[in-house]
Image (tube, rainbow, N blue to C red; front, top):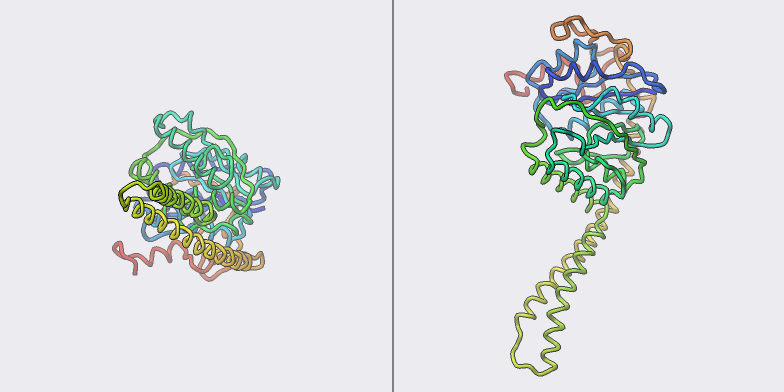
Length: 370
């Protein structure tokens, strides 16, 4: 069984050594461990530090593309190289990489398709009371949308089986965390939660400027995913509410007319007509969204079959260089030469859509893509 540990990085030269040095060399039930660094447009020596520690797998973005794109590209690379399990951690060392062995055990035993670390946010000292409350509330909202029971839905320390990754599709541009849980829950994938204790804070988050921006963008991702999978719950509820809003003024108008009260009560008719229009629009959106959901289901079935062909074992590219258990970091990690280089044109040629580190460097000149 082959495990890929992917680390999305953006200028992490200071903390990346802590992450790499704490990744286990051997795990029971895992035959090979490989480390993949996803460089999301770093301008410091992140790549040099990773190479000095023996990392030979890289996906490099010429500019910052965001966490969701980094996750998706990293998964594509790992799957193309025959990953059976993909673990996602972070380059800022907030997660305890020494718990990767515990994180993957539910997948190895066949008890879960996805394992998510529970950071136990109520015990994190640098989280404010407001942030702790919002983390708990956000997890409850995601659990409602996904029909799951996860204590920490925002945790990015996760393990995915290859089968789960084939069925999941990341479409958001912000963060994949909420979206993949909602997809997994609605696709009946098994999700396990593993309690962990996070490391000390090393820096502020680069994913968002403040917690309110995070709440806003996460809320948009949750609502989009919820409507995508459960349009009836949204639009049928709106249609009923608008329908009741239309019935009340119409009934009031009829009762007053029958009882012979003076006045035209035109305001009741106007308000009732507006509510009735809203109800009819909600019904129309319900019909349209239901047809779109059917079309999406068919397209996802097709995409799953394409992924199965793309990542078929006969098409897998054997990972270049030694497994992580055989890698020894250099004495001077930053200045040392890389342990192994990917050789273009050989058996270790990266899959289509990826370049070696040198090829990626050649695409950039003076900060611009050629």
